[in-house]
Length: 125
Image 1 (tube, rainbow, N blue to C red):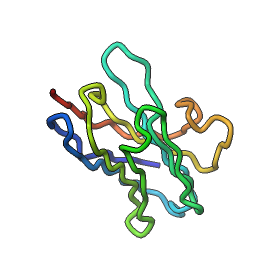
Image 2 (cartoon, rainbow, N blue to C red):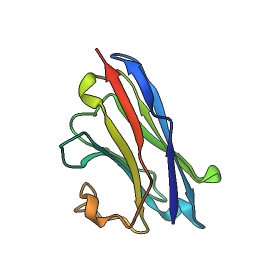
Image 3 (cartoon, one colour):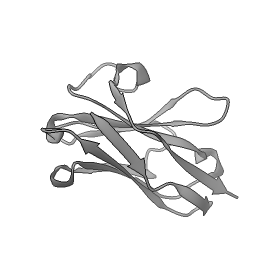
């Protein structure tokens, strides 16, 4: 599976961005897709995940109420709508996928089998 993340940029605090993750795989609707972020010197952090089929979504505590993950299976694309951005959201954002839902460890980076290249998000105060 190949993933292509895009949509990052430099914005001011309080602004919005929408990231996209395009996948090249059949039966994309069955795949779980997650977003992680990594700031310099920090570990990769779970942001959000959206299940295949049901489309249920789960979020990291730091982004709940501000970020929304969605998917368009016809376009093989998952989106991350980022609102009310804060300087602490500054990081490289990665999308990742796996074929099956992992109910217990969906927030753990190592369970995902394919990763996109990352897109930089910079939020200035």
